[in-house]
Length: 266
Image (cartoon, rainbow, N blue to C red; front, side, top):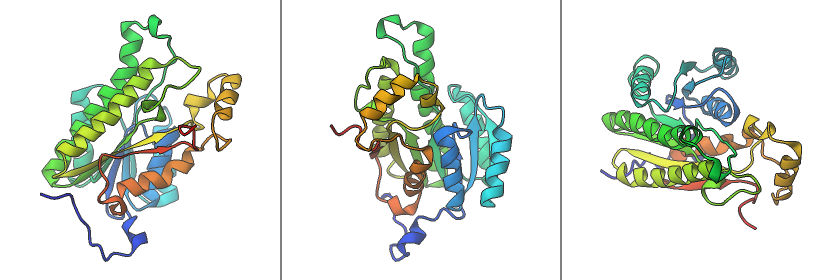
């Protein structure tokens, strides 16, 4: 079965619409994920999102629902637990999506700066379990639903760290996990061409809690390395996720789109 092709006579702006779609975003309570939930809802989708530690997830869902007039729901989930991910995705599809999930965004992620010779089992596992294994369990749960319904769309949040080594911080575990995720996405894109598209977004430095909790002198150094001379706001990623989630990107699969203000170019 060939890759899904929509009605090509649809006006181009209508191809970006997610009206009537159901989406799920992991790690959707804050940062990039929060903006992705908002963006997909503004484009017309009903959106469920998962969270692990956020205490205000229900308030976030209610706020986005009020702003967009779409159904938004929050579900607690640890993406490193395979069975929990499977059960939660099936539950969301059944009770929130009327039996369907059209778009899944695997966004949950963590970062630690650890010298490579100081890794122990616990901190190595923490980064890789969330960033790599968690994406695999997310993809597998989504893929089962996509295959059953005959069509679906997976978007994975990777990082420019999949393609380069950030300096001066030491984050070999994070970099390796993100590189693995990009290769995983490419592999799934080929394997799933009969029923799903799979693409990655690789942001550079984004003004989220992951960055702002770092020392100010480190933030200034990173800023000096970016040709655009500013740090990206998470709101600036919204259009890209909507594009990848929509029929406007109907022939795109296996891609990794870097959005970094030129950071990876010099």
